[in-house]
Image (cartoon, rainbow, N blue to C red; front, side, top):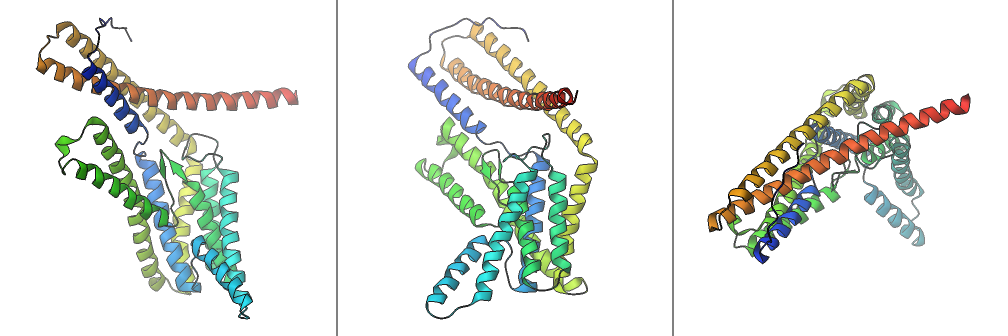
Length: 359
């Protein structure tokens, strides 16, 4: 890319303040990007599976598999009952085992996936994690008794919940909705307060406030999608429990089939998916780089032809904001490509060192 020689001119206090606000707005927009469509679909579908599994577990054994908060509270209740002579060892055992099973599932996910962000191009075993999740659900559908099968469902929920803990600045929980609904409420409150301060008129918002509203709006889309899919999954689980012949827990085969099929597909097509995602990210980087070059060229032409009129200053101000956003997009794409390249180098070096040690 050719460098443009742009004459430097001292900025007025208002212009300097405007540039600072636009830079801050660009940083706010960079703090959260809407997840890519396959990541978003991945998380939403897993939320639907968790909603179905949780409803089926309660219908089958009258125990919620993913409610660690409720199980922990039940432990406290049972211990309090012990001091009153109302010792319910069976209920206490159920609560303890459910919490422990959820923990074991999350632990297994930590062994298989060593990143706390969804990243399909690394060394994480997403396919194996999904197949293990499916296996736990199948065992829950066929094992006899009450506590053992629901513990396998709880382990599946823990494994799945740890699979998508964080992505692009938004906390993602696919097996329970307390945090999701909390984030929806607090985000709506922030947006409402910004508009109330400005008399409910978007035209009065400055660049930073528009950036904050845009970021919170994108977060709401992700979070509300999680809630909706979890709810829809629960409804599907209820109806499938009435349709599938046999005991109600056989309905767990529906989410098990989905997660297992997705895991096997990922393992079979992992290299194809990696190549496709790399191509998409490279194309995006080239597109953003070309856009940044066009904006810089336009800025140089405007600076050469600018007259000190109010209209020209306003146009320059808008162009400056566009330029800053374009450069931040290029920066984010470049960091992503560099991270992928470093992972490839790490794998190459580790393979070389193992070969050298064998020699």
